Picture 1 (cartoon, rainbow, N blue to C red):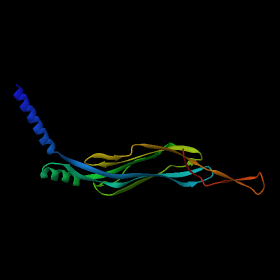
Picture 2: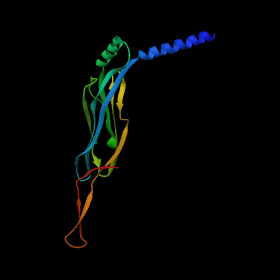
Picture 3: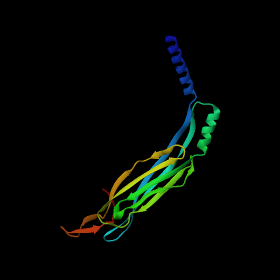
Picture 4: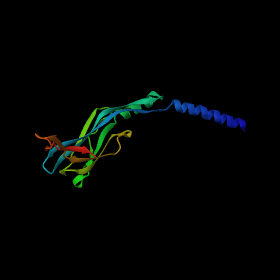
Length: 186
């Protein structure tokens, strides 16, 4: 009985080591970056417009890692060569009933360089109106699923005008001038 148990244990250890030596898998090298911008577009006496831009740029690469027979490596490499990547961007502002949403860029080869941007007009915002800008981007791989994801980012901002004061010609007099309107992070 002990001999049978010992032989089974040795066999399992030996086979387990063979299985480890025969495993190979795709290895990802991911180099994506997210850029986001809020740009002041135009204004009047009561408010104005802004644009939110979200960009994903970069590339990824896949290779075969591990140790396995060359025919298995060739099959995995063939699957990698046929895979594609596709960007997805969420660009949404909550003001005026909401503007924007999800967009999907074109699929390209797994190691192609991407530079995909979405633009979203906030609509007219009254002075001192606050909005939430939500954005997220991800890169989907046809072979590995989502390989890059920023997670949802919430960035509140408001359309505001600033005032500056300078002294006038005589003591005690102040001149108030309106500076250019702009966007303020809240």
